[in-house]
Each structure stands twice: as C-alpha cells, then as structure tokens.
Amino acid sequence: MPTVISLINLKGGVGKTTLTVAMAEFMAAEHGLRVLVVDLDPQTNATVSLIHEQEWRRRNMRGQTVLNVFLDHLSKYRIFSPQEAIIRKVSNIQGGIEGLDLLPSSIDLIEVHDEFLRASAALPVNPLHILGGALRESLPDYDIVLIDCPPDLGLICQNGLMISNYYIIPTIPDILSTYGIPQIVNRIERLKSETGIPIQPLGLVISKFREQSNTHKAQTPLLRLNAHRDGYQRVLETVIPEGTRAAAVMDSTLNFTSLHDKYGYDNPYRHYQSLTEEVLSYVRK
Image (cartoon, rainbow, N blue to C red; front, side, top):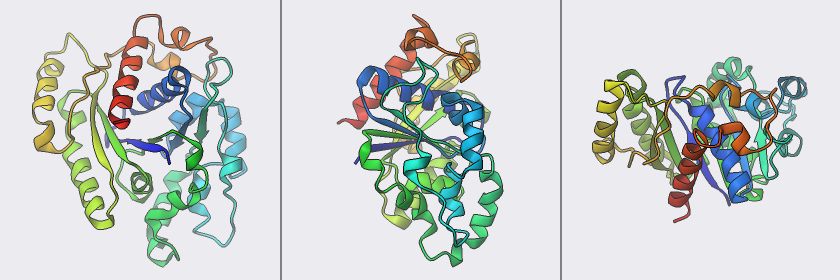
C-alpha cells in the first residue's frame, strides 16, 4: 500500500496546492515514484494545474471526478469508475510526467457537501469510508498519494484523512495563517480516537516566507519551539520563500521542458527539491 499524505490548512492562500503539485512532480520526476494526486478541494486548483481546463470540463460533465465518489452514495446510480476517472501522466512538463496521476476535483463539491452531510446518517455505509472504498483497488498501484484537502474539516476532508498515514500543514508564519492550527490538530486527534486510524502529523511547512518581514522572522522560531506542545510534531527544516513564479508554474496552459525550466535553475527549484527529499526521509523511515 502507498504512503498517503494529506495537506491541509483552514485558511486559503498559504501555498497548500502549490506545495502539493510541486512535491508530486519532484517525487515522480526525480525519485521515480508512482504518485497519485487526489484533489478534494472544490476550488480545483491542483486539478487545473496538472491538466488543461478544457480536459477537466469534459471529465466533469462525464462524471469522471472525485465528486461522483460521493454522488454515487446519494443516488441509486453508480457512475464513478477509478479506472476512468484517474488521469495518467499529468503535468505541464513535457506533456506529462510518467508515473504522476491525478484524481480530479469538481467545483460542484461545494454544493454536494451539505447534501452529503444531511444524508450521511441514512447511508448504508459509514460516510467516512466512502473515498477509501472507492479507491481500494487503485491505491496499491502507487508509492505515494498526496491529498489536497479542502479548507475545512467536514466529511469530505475527513474521508481524505481516513486513508492518510500523515498530514502536513502548510502555513505562512503570521498570526492569521497559524490561527487554525490547534483546531486542525485537535480535530484529527479526535478523529483518531473515534476511528482508530493511524494518521500522524508530519509537521508544518513554512511557505511564502518573507525575509523582510519581522513578523515572519519572529513567528518561525516560535512555531518550531511549540511544535511538540501544540501537537504538530515539527516544523520542517525547508522553508519556502515567497516568490514571483507561483502563478506561472501553476498555469497548465504553459509548457515546460523540465523541472528546472518550470521552477528555475536556482530558486524555487532547490526549495521544492529539498522539501520533497525531507518529506520522503520521514515517510521512508
């Protein structure tokens, strides 16, 4: 079975999706791993970073997204097929990276979430196990699964956490971005105690760090100091600075020839490379 890592923060704009996509590309391209990105975020940013928007629209109309994992349990019809929904060899690098696959999201997840929540008590299966059940036969094909979670702790997010071995909290080192961290840690600990899942915190990743910001420079050592006390285990050593290439690298309409071409020959390439190696060093122990 693969190592499954969820990336989660309750605040948007902290670099969660950019980190998910970058680590997936580096794991597949530089480490030769078979990687699946599961996009549970209805904003679909990871999806449209890895495939063209037109391709996503076709698949969304055909029911070939993660949305139908949940819709299938709200109706008597079965539409979702992992073999049809998972897209092989994705990325805007050389037309796709071998070994990097995607289960795309849908903006309609926003609407189905409340309906799913209302119907959960009447479902014939445990609503927390729906995603795991749908992907049971597909997950063994991969070494690593990265789940881009929605910015909440609802049932869809919990479905991702239920199949995860670890979770990472990307955060900007400021007050607003770190405010929800205790809520994330406490809710996941409660989920563990209620279900017995073995998920563990892999740590925080400092992203969009600004060297000129006194707040960022003051908050980062405090986050490291309080890691064990606050339950997120550690702050990873690799710090991702704020950069100007983020929008470009997430644009699936652009075509790149290599990781260096996409992420630069110095930064942010070496930061994402270092982060990927650091994450793999923990999950391969």
